[in-house]
Length: 274
Image (tube, rainbow, N blue to C red; front, side):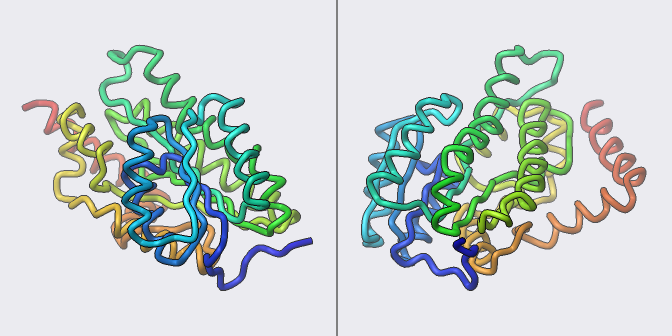
């Protein structure tokens, strides 16, 4: 049975990235290309995929494939993953990065918005991972999930986005033990606010309370997330944090939950009163 990569390197490895046309996914593609990985980018928009491929090709990877597929469409993403494996003969790494956001108060959001977030952010990762499992078992590969700081902290305004990210955290923790028997390494990353198109959307459409809670936190670049991410993958870390603040906030919430709630409630209430 293949064993999960130790001191992983990515030269000539087949790396599949969902949501690979922008943001963290595109930044990851660039970093993997620098390591001479064979890249497979999956996203819904063909034009954005073509533009992303053009950017990534500047780093001269040995090859790059693109598939237009919606991860929430089980048949479509399963077909894309299997076509990748059959065409290239293997799959070594799968990054479940595809995601959307939905801002606003729970009472004001249409149920369809919440369902769409769940379908893409969580079920999309489930469908992709199930399709890739046997390929990763054969290669002794890596299966990874892009959660979020919002995947362990639920805050006002994130009733659409945060629950599926919590679910990704639970999925990664459940699969970590199961995957060991199949020689697959599982990991999950928790990016903080990251300078991506999705974050720009949140800044425009999010609640003032949500903005107040992150007022003093500077968004980091997608390139920074990608570098930290790949470094963590190369060391086969299970949990990957991008900065001290992300790890510290989780520690405070886990060890002093009452204090954490009082602080966040106070900030939210002051903002909501203005």
